[in-house]
Length: 232
Ligand code: CA
Image (cartoon, rainbow, N blue to C red):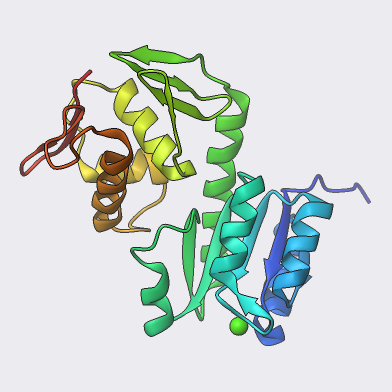
C-alpha cells in the first residue's frame, strides 16, 4: 500500500477525550497527522518538539488557560492557531480579543467543517511561505513581508501577525476603498469567521500603534458606509 503524503501535522490540545479522539481519527482519515495532548504544558512542549503545521487549542485546559498558551506560542511562532471554545460565555472571551489566533471553532463542531477550515488556513499560510514578497516602501512606511517587520519613519512597530497582514494588505492596495468583507476574505481568508466587527477592532488597534493621532488618522482612513482606505 502506498504511503499517503501527510496533509500536515495538526497539534490538537483538548482535554475532553470524547472530542479529541474522534477528531484525531477524522484528521487521520483526511490525510493529516494528528498529535493529541490534554494539557497546556503538553501543548507548549509538543509545539516546540514536533513543529506542527497548525494548532487546535482548547480554551479551558486542566492546567491552564488556552489563551495564555496562545500568547506564549505567538511569542516564538507564526504557526496557525484555531481556538476551541464552548458556546456562550467562553465564546465571549475569544470574540473581540486579540490573541493572535487565526480562527476559532465553537464546540460541538462538525469534524468535516473544521477540516475544511484547517485546509483553508493551511493553504493561506503555505501561500504566504512560498512568496516571500519584496519589501514595500510607501510614504515613510516600510514593510518587510519576509521578516514581518513594519517600520514607520524608521521606527519599528510592534504588530501582531494579523495587524501586520492587515497593514500589508491596505498598503498594497493603497488608494483603493476596501470593504470590510473584502478584508475578511483576503486577510482572514474564510467566511464570516470572525465578523466584520473584528476588522474594525483590528483597524483601531493598528491606528493606535501606527498613527501619530489615532483619532485623526493620516494613513488608515475610514470611508463612511464603505470601508477603509490607506492614504500613502
Ligand atoms: Ca476543556
